[in-house]
Length: 305
Image (tube, rainbow, N blue to C red; front, side, top):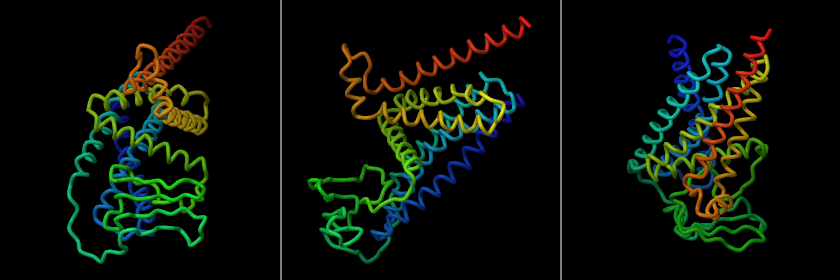
């Protein structure tokens, strides 16, 4: 019980610290990009904060599970108890924060008055160069998330009726980004994971619990990687690579192409809603079966000696 209490305390503290830090950093990043091109508004700040929190929640879920598996491995805690504790606590915290964010976005922002900048048809562009991308806000800054036309060189004009339901994680147009691709791809995959979790939550609690539960189950099953060597730092690095692979796999399985593949299976064997959780669940079962067989084989070898 003492070890379990320590594990739960470590999980709670690490989850809280990582979530708050990631939310703050992500919000500042989005806010700086936003105010460079549009005047700040209460609803836009609230939207950015909720978007940052959703993104941070996805990062926290992955990173906290990895840290706690590493902590439990270094302390030689029971693997089954660690897995069950991580699954239950992580699922509870993720659902609780998702529930709060879902209700928070319906809170009306405070009323403020200010001078409106830009009329209907406001054009946003990074420079006067004709080869640069541009966005035309059809209703100006009065509705920055409203209808817009995007102009990208060598491509047809694209009309978007509304972006109010789309998470704002990038500037309105591609002004350029010097972030290394490895880091940028991870940020994009975390954003896609956050969107997937929001979509599942909006559908139903059952859909959310099935998806998140299967994902957490698969992540917690990768604890054997944390014990591959006698060097904790090397094991942690291997765990980071494994979790990054799971994040990339999640993005791939939720892609429109894979949804078409699942939908075209004969007899509709797997629906689009259940396909990805089923894959996560059976992959976790295979990993746990492998871990149990390896444990039995090692114990048998030790007894023979």
